[in-house]
Image 1: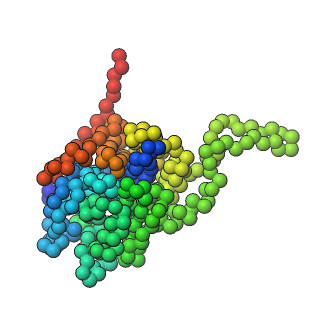
Image 2: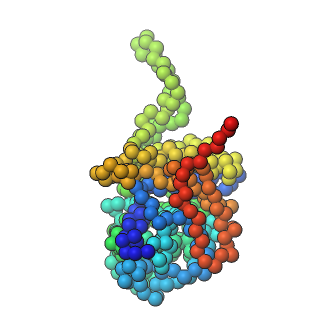
Image 3: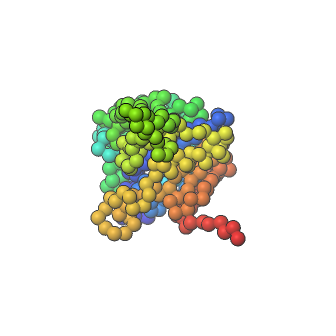
Amino acid sequence: MNYQEAKKAAKQVNAGCSSIAWDTKDGKHLWGRNYDFNQIAASAVTAIPRDYQYYTAGTPFDHNLEVNNRIASQYAAIGIGTQSMEVTPVLYEGINEKGLMGGQLFYAGFASYPDVARPNTQVVNPGYVVTHVLAQCATVDEVIELLTKTDTIINQPLVESNVTVHWVFSDRSGETIILEPDNQQITVYRNTAGVLTNSPDYRWHKQNLLSYLNVQNTEFPDRNMDGISVQKPFKGTGALGLPGDFTSQSRFIRASFLKYYGIKGQNEDQGIQYLFHLLDNVAMPLGIVKVENRDDLSAYDESIYTACMCAESLKFYWKSYENTAIHCVDLNRELENSDLKTFPLENRAPEFRLMN
């Protein structure tokens, strides 16, 4: 990997996304996200083994590696990310062998980190947080302890890219936490709604829900107005006013509505299928969100992939924009690995089942 390739890959950490934590009727805990961006070069599904040596900060391209920032993973984990930094796999999201799962989402204009670490704490680059958390923590309680007391997430670019993200994690208890780097410290939200998108902060999104308390899944009744019968032309009137655009604010409202009213699956197989459907409703179709002034496909953000996972089975599922067939890797089968193992994400050609 050369410097320019690493620089391009580093930009992918700041992908705009939507995520939902959910559960099933038989008690399985699920988490899923859309990865919304205009590129995903040099990325793959990556399994990280136990006792894997990695750096919590620095890259060989930035010439800032320090031996005291090198540690070993306690837990095996799997997720989608890039190995372009060479010394540390950068996971965008994932799950570990203890059932802790979560990821990072773009937090532009709000993320703020201290320049210097607190005394006696481990330095962490914000782009390495997901990998580091999944490698070291078993529960959301341990995540909070790690990121607010043991470690300091510092203001350190990743090959010239400023990493402006916030994080969401969920575990087998069913609790979903959100951590946001505000005013050079970590703000922790516990017992959240289990939904996260992008800027602004979670507190703002939560308050914004108050503007949509009228939105529901039941029909409004027909009306008689001064002797004139006004009847519904079709179904779905309860959701009138639900925002349909692709801003972070609207995706948060839509995802919250979908999670609240969506029918839970009876088991993991059904729950994962239903969760993919929910995330489809906040996904970005190609051509709708133009981010650069040129005519090729990279001018548009799209939901390049959707990933879902189960805390109990340790199965990691994904599909891509081009290939909507759901793929799966079982982390249990990778627990005895001693080296990194990757599964291709770039095999994104569509698959069709011919029936005659």
